Image (cartoon, rainbow, N blue to C red; front, side, top):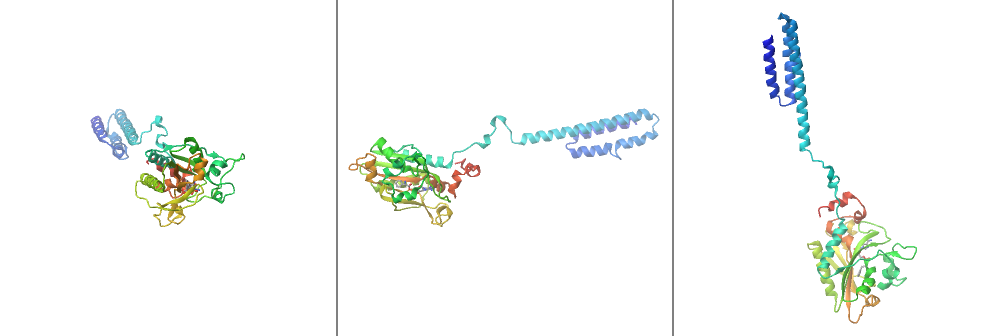
Length: 340
Ligand code: FA5
Protein backbone atom coordinates (compact mmCIF):
# COMPACT_ATOMS: atom_id res chain seq x y z
CA UNK A 1 0.00 0.00 0.00
CA UNK A 2 2.79 2.41 0.96
CA UNK A 3 4.55 1.89 -2.38
CA UNK A 4 1.29 2.43 -4.30
CA UNK A 5 0.68 5.72 -2.48
CA UNK A 6 4.22 6.91 -3.28
CA UNK A 7 3.76 6.03 -6.95
CA UNK A 8 0.44 7.90 -7.08
CA UNK A 9 2.01 10.95 -5.37
CA UNK A 10 4.82 11.03 -7.95
CA UNK A 11 2.37 10.63 -10.88
CA UNK A 12 0.15 13.34 -9.47
CA UNK A 13 3.01 15.83 -9.09
CA UNK A 14 4.13 15.18 -12.64
CA UNK A 15 0.59 15.60 -14.03
CA UNK A 16 0.07 18.78 -11.95
CA UNK A 17 3.21 20.35 -13.42
CA UNK A 18 1.82 19.73 -16.92
CA UNK A 19 -1.71 21.04 -16.22
CA UNK A 20 -1.86 24.31 -18.18
CA UNK A 21 -5.45 25.37 -17.60
CA UNK A 22 -8.43 24.95 -15.31
CA UNK A 23 -9.91 22.14 -17.47
CA UNK A 24 -6.74 20.06 -17.01
CA UNK A 25 -6.87 20.72 -13.26
CA UNK A 26 -10.49 19.60 -13.09
CA UNK A 27 -9.62 16.35 -14.91
CA UNK A 28 -6.85 15.75 -12.40
CA UNK A 29 -9.20 16.42 -9.49
CA UNK A 30 -11.72 13.88 -10.82
CA UNK A 31 -8.94 11.35 -11.53
CA UNK A 32 -7.64 11.52 -7.95
CA UNK A 33 -10.47 12.73 -5.73
CA UNK A 34 -13.59 11.68 -7.68
CA UNK A 35 -15.95 8.87 -6.56
CA UNK A 36 -14.12 6.42 -8.78
CA UNK A 37 -10.74 8.13 -8.41
CA UNK A 38 -7.39 6.87 -7.09
CA UNK A 39 -7.99 8.04 -3.48
CA UNK A 40 -11.39 6.25 -3.33
CA UNK A 41 -9.74 3.08 -4.74
CA UNK A 42 -7.03 3.28 -2.06
CA UNK A 43 -9.73 3.55 0.62
CA UNK A 44 -11.43 0.46 -0.71
CA UNK A 45 -8.08 -1.36 -0.66
CA UNK A 46 -7.79 -0.70 3.10
CA UNK A 47 -9.89 -3.82 3.70
CA UNK A 48 -6.95 -6.02 2.73
CA UNK A 49 -4.30 -4.12 4.71
CA UNK A 50 -3.14 -5.33 8.13
CA UNK A 51 -2.12 -1.90 9.60
CA UNK A 52 -5.29 0.00 8.65
CA UNK A 53 -4.48 2.97 10.94
CA UNK A 54 -1.13 3.81 9.35
CA UNK A 55 -2.39 3.16 5.79
CA UNK A 56 -5.49 5.32 6.44
CA UNK A 57 -3.28 8.22 7.63
CA UNK A 58 -1.10 7.90 4.50
CA UNK A 59 -4.16 7.92 2.21
CA UNK A 60 -5.62 10.94 4.02
CA UNK A 61 -2.41 12.90 3.79
CA UNK A 62 -2.20 12.11 0.03
CA UNK A 63 -5.82 13.27 -0.31
CA UNK A 64 -5.09 16.53 1.55
CA UNK A 65 -1.94 17.13 -0.53
CA UNK A 66 -3.86 16.59 -3.77
CA UNK A 67 -6.73 18.89 -2.67
CA UNK A 68 -4.33 21.65 -1.56
CA UNK A 69 -2.12 21.39 -4.65
CA UNK A 70 -5.11 21.53 -7.02
CA UNK A 71 -6.57 24.52 -5.15
CA UNK A 72 -3.24 26.40 -5.21
CA UNK A 73 -2.65 25.63 -8.88
CA UNK A 74 -6.20 26.88 -9.70
CA UNK A 75 -5.52 30.12 -7.79
CA UNK A 76 -2.21 30.60 -9.62
CA UNK A 77 -3.93 30.12 -13.00
CA UNK A 78 -6.63 32.69 -12.11
CA UNK A 79 -4.00 35.22 -10.96
CA UNK A 80 -2.03 34.71 -14.19
CA UNK A 81 -5.18 35.29 -16.26
CA UNK A 82 -5.95 38.55 -14.37
CA UNK A 83 -2.35 39.73 -14.83
CA UNK A 84 -2.55 39.01 -18.57
CA UNK A 85 -5.83 40.96 -18.82
CA UNK A 86 -4.28 43.94 -17.01
CA UNK A 87 -1.20 43.80 -19.24
CA UNK A 88 -3.26 43.86 -22.40
CA UNK A 89 -5.79 46.46 -21.13
CA UNK A 90 -5.39 50.20 -21.83
CA UNK A 91 -3.17 51.68 -19.16
CA UNK A 92 -4.80 54.12 -16.78
CA UNK A 93 -2.48 56.91 -15.82
CA UNK A 94 -3.90 59.02 -12.99
CA UNK A 95 -1.61 61.94 -13.81
CA UNK A 96 -3.24 62.14 -17.25
CA UNK A 97 -6.78 62.33 -15.95
CA UNK A 98 -9.03 63.83 -18.67
CA UNK A 99 -6.25 63.82 -21.24
CA UNK A 100 -8.34 61.81 -23.66
CA UNK A 101 -11.01 64.48 -23.53
CA UNK A 102 -8.81 67.39 -24.57
CA UNK A 103 -10.76 70.29 -26.01
CA UNK A 104 -10.45 71.68 -29.49
CA UNK A 105 -10.75 75.02 -31.20
CA UNK A 106 -14.25 76.06 -32.14
CA UNK A 107 -14.80 75.84 -35.91
CA UNK A 108 -15.47 79.58 -36.04
CA UNK A 109 -12.04 80.17 -34.49
CA UNK A 110 -10.46 77.86 -37.07
CA UNK A 111 -12.22 79.60 -39.97
CA UNK A 112 -11.39 83.06 -38.59
CA UNK A 113 -7.70 82.21 -38.35
CA UNK A 114 -7.60 80.90 -41.89
CA UNK A 115 -9.17 84.03 -43.34
CA UNK A 116 -6.94 86.22 -41.18
CA UNK A 117 -3.83 84.47 -42.49
CA UNK A 118 -4.86 85.10 -46.07
CA UNK A 119 -5.41 88.82 -45.48
CA UNK A 120 -2.30 89.25 -43.35
CA UNK A 121 -0.30 87.88 -46.28
CA UNK A 122 -1.86 90.63 -48.42
CA UNK A 123 -0.83 93.41 -46.06
CA UNK A 124 -4.04 93.80 -44.02
CA UNK A 125 -4.03 94.44 -40.26
CA UNK A 126 -6.49 92.78 -37.87
CA UNK A 127 -8.64 95.08 -35.78
CA UNK A 128 -10.84 94.44 -32.81
CA UNK A 129 -14.03 96.32 -32.06
CA UNK A 130 -16.79 96.46 -29.46
CA UNK A 131 -19.89 94.30 -29.47
CA UNK A 132 -21.95 97.06 -27.83
CA UNK A 133 -22.04 100.16 -30.00
CA UNK A 134 -24.18 103.24 -30.44
CA UNK A 135 -26.72 104.02 -33.13
CA UNK A 136 -24.30 106.38 -34.85
CA UNK A 137 -21.60 103.73 -35.39
CA UNK A 138 -23.98 100.95 -36.40
CA UNK A 139 -26.22 103.00 -38.70
CA UNK A 140 -25.84 106.76 -39.06
CA UNK A 141 -22.12 106.80 -39.88
CA UNK A 142 -22.92 104.21 -42.54
CA UNK A 143 -25.32 106.43 -44.42
CA UNK A 144 -28.37 104.89 -42.71
CA UNK A 145 -30.17 107.81 -41.05
CA UNK A 146 -32.93 107.27 -38.50
CA UNK A 147 -36.14 105.91 -40.07
CA UNK A 148 -34.26 104.69 -43.17
CA UNK A 149 -36.01 101.53 -44.45
CA UNK A 150 -32.63 99.69 -44.55
CA UNK A 151 -32.82 99.53 -40.75
CA UNK A 152 -35.69 97.05 -41.05
CA UNK A 153 -33.26 94.40 -42.30
CA UNK A 154 -31.15 94.60 -39.16
CA UNK A 155 -33.29 94.66 -36.02
CA UNK A 156 -31.25 94.07 -32.89
CA UNK A 157 -31.24 94.12 -29.10
CA UNK A 158 -31.23 97.54 -27.44
CA UNK A 159 -29.91 98.49 -24.02
CA UNK A 160 -31.76 100.88 -21.72
CA UNK A 161 -29.11 103.55 -22.36
CA UNK A 162 -29.84 103.53 -26.11
CA UNK A 163 -26.79 101.49 -27.06
CA UNK A 164 -27.25 98.28 -29.02
CA UNK A 165 -25.63 94.95 -29.83
CA UNK A 166 -23.97 95.49 -33.20
CA UNK A 167 -25.80 93.98 -36.14
CA UNK A 168 -22.80 93.91 -38.45
CA UNK A 169 -19.06 94.39 -38.35
CA UNK A 170 -19.53 97.43 -40.59
CA UNK A 171 -20.23 99.22 -37.28
CA UNK A 172 -16.45 99.50 -36.84
CA UNK A 173 -15.80 101.16 -40.22
CA UNK A 174 -16.09 104.74 -38.98
CA UNK A 175 -13.93 104.10 -35.90
CA UNK A 176 -11.15 102.47 -37.96
CA UNK A 177 -11.17 105.15 -40.65
CA UNK A 178 -10.80 107.82 -37.96
CA UNK A 179 -8.11 105.84 -36.15
CA UNK A 180 -5.83 105.18 -39.14
CA UNK A 181 -6.89 107.50 -41.97
CA UNK A 182 -5.94 106.60 -45.55
CA UNK A 183 -4.32 104.60 -47.05
CA UNK A 184 -5.75 101.70 -45.09
CA UNK A 185 -6.04 97.91 -45.30
CA UNK A 186 -7.80 96.26 -42.38
CA UNK A 187 -10.00 93.33 -41.50
CA UNK A 188 -12.09 93.15 -38.36
CA UNK A 189 -13.84 89.96 -37.33
CA UNK A 190 -16.58 90.10 -34.74
CA UNK A 191 -19.72 88.72 -33.21
CA UNK A 192 -22.96 90.17 -34.54
CA UNK A 193 -26.51 90.03 -33.21
CA UNK A 194 -29.85 90.21 -34.91
CA UNK A 195 -33.33 89.97 -33.53
CA UNK A 196 -34.61 87.49 -36.06
CA UNK A 197 -35.98 83.98 -36.08
CA UNK A 198 -33.47 81.24 -36.57
CA UNK A 199 -33.33 78.47 -39.17
CA UNK A 200 -30.65 76.26 -40.73
CA UNK A 201 -28.76 79.30 -42.14
CA UNK A 202 -29.79 82.11 -39.76
CA UNK A 203 -28.71 82.63 -36.17
CA UNK A 204 -29.44 85.50 -33.80
CA UNK A 205 -25.75 85.50 -32.85
CA UNK A 206 -23.20 84.89 -35.57
CA UNK A 207 -19.81 86.05 -36.82
CA UNK A 208 -18.83 88.30 -39.66
CA UNK A 209 -15.49 89.54 -40.88
CA UNK A 210 -15.38 93.02 -42.29
CA UNK A 211 -12.65 94.10 -44.64
CA UNK A 212 -11.76 97.56 -45.90
CA UNK A 213 -9.16 98.78 -48.33
CA UNK A 214 -8.82 102.50 -48.95
CA UNK A 215 -6.19 103.99 -51.21
CA UNK A 216 -5.76 106.00 -54.38
CA UNK A 217 -7.34 104.48 -57.48
CA UNK A 218 -9.09 101.56 -55.81
CA UNK A 219 -11.67 100.09 -58.15
CA UNK A 220 -14.10 97.20 -58.47
CA UNK A 221 -11.38 95.07 -60.07
CA UNK A 222 -9.34 95.34 -56.83
CA UNK A 223 -12.42 94.24 -54.90
CA UNK A 224 -13.01 91.23 -57.15
CA UNK A 225 -9.34 90.23 -57.02
CA UNK A 226 -9.28 90.22 -53.20
CA UNK A 227 -12.57 88.33 -52.92
CA UNK A 228 -11.42 85.66 -55.38
CA UNK A 229 -8.04 85.25 -53.66
CA UNK A 230 -9.66 84.95 -50.23
CA UNK A 231 -12.14 82.28 -51.35
CA UNK A 232 -9.62 80.17 -53.25
CA UNK A 233 -7.13 80.29 -50.34
CA UNK A 234 -9.71 79.48 -47.69
CA UNK A 235 -11.47 76.66 -49.52
CA UNK A 236 -8.34 75.36 -51.25
CA UNK A 237 -10.57 74.05 -54.01
CA UNK A 238 -12.69 75.57 -56.74
CA UNK A 239 -15.94 76.87 -55.33
CA UNK A 240 -18.69 78.28 -57.50
CA UNK A 241 -19.63 81.86 -56.63
CA UNK A 242 -21.83 84.48 -58.24
CA UNK A 243 -21.76 88.23 -58.01
CA UNK A 244 -25.02 90.11 -58.36
CA UNK A 245 -26.11 93.66 -57.62
CA UNK A 246 -27.05 94.29 -53.98
CA UNK A 247 -28.21 97.33 -52.08
CA UNK A 248 -26.49 98.58 -48.96
CA UNK A 249 -26.63 102.33 -48.20
CA UNK A 250 -22.92 102.36 -47.28
CA UNK A 251 -21.61 101.16 -50.66
CA UNK A 252 -22.11 102.29 -54.23
CA UNK A 253 -22.16 100.16 -56.28
CA UNK A 254 -22.97 97.23 -53.99
CA UNK A 255 -22.88 93.50 -54.66
CA UNK A 256 -24.04 90.28 -53.17
CA UNK A 257 -21.47 87.53 -53.40
CA UNK A 258 -23.17 84.14 -53.10
CA UNK A 259 -21.56 80.74 -52.80
CA UNK A 260 -22.97 77.61 -54.43
CA UNK A 261 -24.28 75.52 -51.53
CA UNK A 262 -21.54 73.04 -50.60
CA UNK A 263 -24.05 70.90 -48.67
CA UNK A 264 -26.33 69.99 -51.59
CA UNK A 265 -24.06 70.98 -54.49
CA UNK A 266 -26.65 73.51 -55.65
CA UNK A 267 -29.65 71.18 -55.84
CA UNK A 268 -31.41 72.94 -52.96
CA UNK A 269 -31.66 71.97 -49.29
CA UNK A 270 -32.64 73.52 -45.93
CA UNK A 271 -29.08 74.87 -45.44
CA UNK A 272 -29.51 77.16 -48.46
CA UNK A 273 -33.28 77.61 -48.13
CA UNK A 274 -33.68 75.42 -51.22
CA UNK A 275 -32.13 78.02 -53.51
CA UNK A 276 -28.82 76.24 -54.15
CA UNK A 277 -26.98 79.48 -53.20
CA UNK A 278 -26.03 81.04 -49.90
CA UNK A 279 -25.40 84.76 -49.39
CA UNK A 280 -21.84 84.83 -48.12
CA UNK A 281 -19.99 88.07 -48.60
CA UNK A 282 -21.76 91.26 -49.63
CA UNK A 283 -19.35 93.94 -50.75
CA UNK A 284 -18.99 97.12 -52.73
CA UNK A 285 -17.22 100.43 -53.23
CA UNK A 286 -17.43 102.50 -50.04
CA UNK A 287 -19.97 105.30 -50.41
CA UNK A 288 -18.36 108.78 -50.44
CA UNK A 289 -20.66 109.87 -47.58
CA UNK A 290 -19.20 107.10 -45.42
CA UNK A 291 -15.63 108.00 -46.33
CA UNK A 292 -16.25 111.68 -45.52
CA UNK A 293 -17.89 110.77 -42.21
CA UNK A 294 -14.71 108.85 -41.40
CA UNK A 295 -12.53 111.87 -42.23
CA UNK A 296 -11.21 110.49 -45.54
CA UNK A 297 -10.53 112.85 -48.44
CA UNK A 298 -12.91 111.58 -51.14
CA UNK A 299 -11.19 113.62 -53.85
CA UNK A 300 -8.04 111.60 -53.35
CA UNK A 301 -9.15 108.24 -52.02
CA UNK A 302 -11.63 105.54 -52.80
CA UNK A 303 -12.04 102.09 -51.29
CA UNK A 304 -13.92 98.85 -51.11
CA UNK A 305 -15.49 97.05 -48.16
CA UNK A 306 -16.91 93.59 -47.64
CA UNK A 307 -18.84 91.86 -44.87
CA UNK A 308 -17.99 88.17 -44.94
CA UNK A 309 -20.47 85.88 -43.15
CA UNK A 310 -17.87 83.92 -41.17
CA UNK A 311 -20.31 81.48 -39.62
CA UNK A 312 -21.75 80.66 -43.02
CA UNK A 313 -18.25 80.30 -44.42
CA UNK A 314 -17.52 77.73 -41.67
CA UNK A 315 -20.77 75.92 -42.60
CA UNK A 316 -19.68 75.64 -46.22
CA UNK A 317 -16.05 74.87 -45.48
CA UNK A 318 -16.71 72.12 -42.95
CA UNK A 319 -20.01 70.84 -44.35
CA UNK A 320 -22.10 71.83 -41.30
CA UNK A 321 -25.73 71.54 -42.35
CA UNK A 322 -27.29 73.61 -39.59
CA UNK A 323 -25.83 76.93 -38.45
CA UNK A 324 -27.39 76.42 -35.00
CA UNK A 325 -24.87 73.64 -34.26
CA UNK A 326 -22.15 76.28 -33.82
CA UNK A 327 -23.79 77.83 -30.76
CA UNK A 328 -25.25 74.58 -29.46
CA UNK A 329 -22.37 73.77 -27.11
CA UNK A 330 -22.91 70.17 -28.21
CA UNK A 331 -19.66 68.25 -27.80
CA UNK A 332 -20.99 65.61 -30.18
CA UNK A 333 -21.05 68.21 -32.95
CA UNK A 334 -18.05 70.34 -31.96
CA UNK A 335 -15.56 67.63 -30.96
CA UNK A 336 -15.49 66.53 -34.60
CA UNK A 337 -13.24 69.51 -35.26
CA UNK A 338 -10.42 68.16 -33.09
CA UNK A 339 -8.58 66.71 -36.01
CA UNK A 340 -8.83 69.76 -38.26
C1 FA5 B 1 -24.22 93.23 -43.87
O1 FA5 B 1 -24.22 92.93 -42.69
C2 FA5 B 1 -23.33 94.30 -44.41
N1 FA5 B 1 -22.77 95.02 -43.32
C3 FA5 B 1 -22.25 93.65 -45.25
C4 FA5 B 1 -21.45 94.60 -46.09
C5 FA5 B 1 -20.25 95.10 -45.62
C6 FA5 B 1 -21.92 94.99 -47.33
C7 FA5 B 1 -19.50 95.95 -46.37
C8 FA5 B 1 -21.18 95.85 -48.10
C9 FA5 B 1 -19.96 96.33 -47.62
P1 FA5 B 1 -25.85 91.30 -44.55
O2 FA5 B 1 -26.95 91.67 -43.65
O3 FA5 B 1 -26.26 90.75 -45.87
O4 FA5 B 1 -24.88 92.51 -44.83
O5 FA5 B 1 -24.90 90.26 -43.82
C10 FA5 B 1 -23.67 89.92 -44.37
C11 FA5 B 1 -23.46 88.41 -44.29
O6 FA5 B 1 -23.55 88.01 -42.93
C12 FA5 B 1 -24.54 87.59 -45.01
O7 FA5 B 1 -24.24 87.42 -46.36
C13 FA5 B 1 -24.45 86.29 -44.26
O8 FA5 B 1 -23.38 85.52 -44.74
C14 FA5 B 1 -24.15 86.75 -42.85
N2 FA5 B 1 -25.40 86.86 -42.07
C15 FA5 B 1 -26.30 87.84 -42.05
N3 FA5 B 1 -27.31 87.57 -41.21
C16 FA5 B 1 -27.03 86.37 -40.68
C17 FA5 B 1 -27.69 85.53 -39.71
N4 FA5 B 1 -28.83 85.88 -39.13
N5 FA5 B 1 -27.12 84.36 -39.41
C18 FA5 B 1 -25.94 84.00 -39.97
N6 FA5 B 1 -25.27 84.74 -40.86
C19 FA5 B 1 -25.81 85.91 -41.22
